[in-house]
Amino acid sequence: MAKQVAIALLVASLALLIIYGADVMVASQSNSAERMGFLPFNDSVRGAAFGGGAVIMSIIAFVIARKEYAPAVSVLLFVNGGLIIAGMVALIGQGALNSADPSGAMRTIGSTIGMGAILVGLGAWKSIRDKKASAARGKEPTQN
Image 1 (tube, one colour):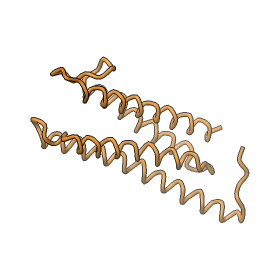
Image 2 (image 1 turned 180 degrees about the horizontal axis):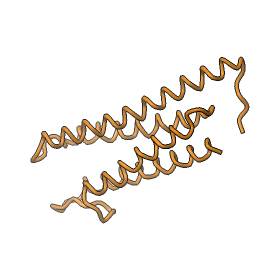
Image 3 (image 1 turned 180 degrees about the vertical axis):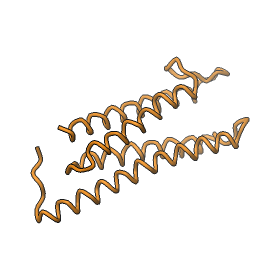
Image 4 (image 1 turned 90 degrees about the horizontal axis):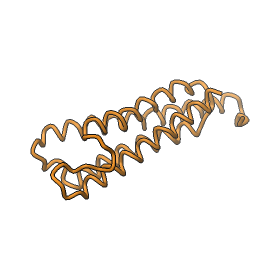
């Protein structure tokens, strides 16, 4: 049961990240001075609600499933963290550091990449732990 809850949280956080990324892409293509996407939020609210919420849900999912064999949890943690890192690399590539406040942009991008790296690290930790648990049993655990 805990494994299914963790996977549901990770899928929901992946959906939030995809919506957030799509909104940022729409906003970056906008010609208006406000650079609004399809979500009716400014950058900080959008980042906190969609990006921060996704990271928090991913960490909660890891905690819930940490003692269960759940390779899907590891994969989804890798995907969520990788998506965050890839999004920040794309922003750097688009010239986000050439904004009016490059030091503020660098702090934001750096801390966001750090959050993505934490999720990738949790995915790696979970994967290693799952492999050790299955090796200790001498065979692959059955999937429920």
